[in-house]
Image 1 (spheres, rainbow, N blue to C red):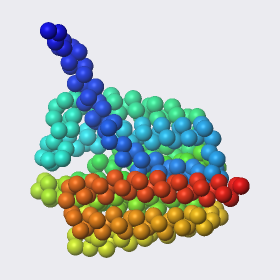
Image 2 (cartoon, helix red, strand yellow; image 1 turned 135 degrees about the vertical axis):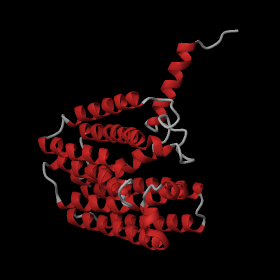
Image 3 (cartoon, one colour; image 1 turned 135 degrees about the horizontal axis):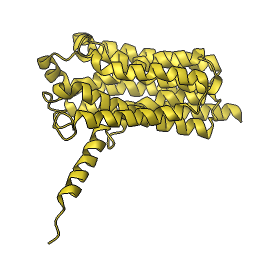
Image 4 (cartoon, helix red, strand yellow; image 1 turned 180 degrees about the vertical axis):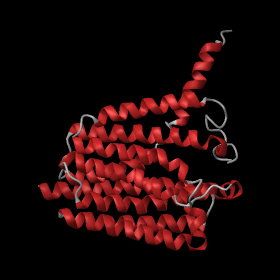
Amino acid sequence: MATTSGPNSKLASKLVALSDIIRLRKQTGTLLLLCPTLWALFMASGGSPSLKHLIVFILGSFLMRSAGCVINDISDRKIDRHVKRTRTRPLASGRLSVKEAVLVFLIFIIVAFVLVLSLNRLTIMLSFAGLALAVIYPLIKRVSHLPQVFLGMAFGWGAVMAWAAVTGTVGLAAILIFFANLCWSISYDTIYALMDIEDDRKIGVKSTAILFGKNLWSILFILNLLLVLLLGAAGISIGLGPIYFAGLFIAFIAFCFILFSVKKNPTHEAAFKGFFFNSIVGLFILFVIIIDLMGRAA
């Protein structure tokens, strides 16, 4: 009977570990990064972004989110061993070495930067700030309860870059989308942090889920309200119409339903579903932006 040879088995194990460290089978994070980027890209281009911009920002979002996962795992490799949900991650479990992870991070960053080089000078300059935010984010949880704020800044920076790529400037709508995403990211990543809150308390990891305490759900409601209001202001600034604003109202109801569902049933599974369904609502907002802009163009 044929058996799998040693080298082939090791190679297969490494490939699985590589796919795990970039969360290849878990792309919710990529969608959450991509949504504000595409909101800005479609708004800035009047609903008709170029194929080049679509490729650069869709592929770039995947690459940067993957690189962010790698640098996060490098930073958290010792912490992850003490958290039930993360103890099997490639670095925490020893399936990858730190050197291998650093190499993967560098490859993804270099490829992402090559993509950015096809864009204008302003966007290239903005990309350095985006990289800095991605690197700083994993360190924040050690010194502050606000790592979700830095995640929001990192994820929202794609919107600023997309606007700059199309217009050559950083417009008011881009700034409003950035702050809208900041509110959104704090909300959905606080829900995500609920999955690890007990382990985090034991080992001293900080998060907004711990910081907000008994005011958690009130604060998350306010953040979702601010998200919709800021997106509404962005829509007003570029002249979007009733389809967009009706869509924002529906999105706000959906966000409230997510909060209610997780609050009513605060389990690990419910928290993850709440996190996942935020990405679906984000895609819905993108859909109504496109539909509204298409109607205006017609």
